Length: 254
Image 1 (spheres, rainbow, N blue to C red):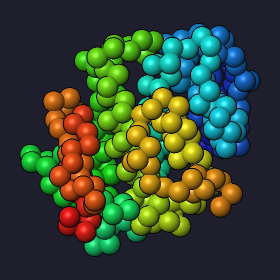
Image 2: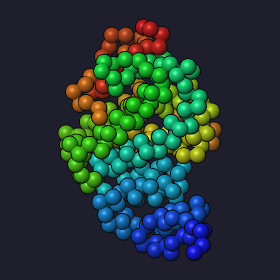
Image 3: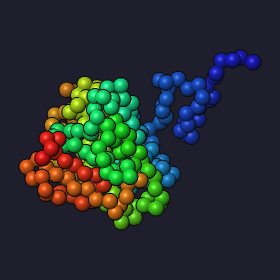
């Protein structure tokens, strides 16, 4: 018997990745309409299919199909962003070390992490990992999201909290690891897609968007009862939002 691993005959209708499949043949399935993806995971399969067709066409990727509930659409997109954002973490790790980034900072803000017995500062890479872990745990929590085909009304408030946290990961990468950020964005257009999603569904207040618009171009378990006070440099005692779980303070110590 030959020791060479042979690819199994592919039945494209099953949309499976078989052992031995060459990289260039990966996901080489026929393009399906959303109606043709008849499963509980049809929406995420459709999103991933659209991303593979053209990652840079973020308008098409974010555009809501007529037959999909907008709340389910946001839910699946946030899950997908978390999945892809983990690849940015891998790219950041060699440079975003405890020595280089002992605090989680971005454009004049220091973010204190709630993934500890008491809210505290932690190295940026730890904060980023805690953020992604927390978002993934929440989005996979059957208490808040028991189904992939409908979202309970009380759980919708978590979308904004998750989006604000994920935005900080992009912001830190942009302002402190620009070369890594830009290389990743050129390859994935993930920030451009995430920003459009957030703007379309009002997930992030405009005043919290700090990355310049041109940077998104390819050409250049969180507790619901926790609170977060976000302090600006000009208004150090103003409470901006009470739905998040972390404290944000000025990097200048204001």
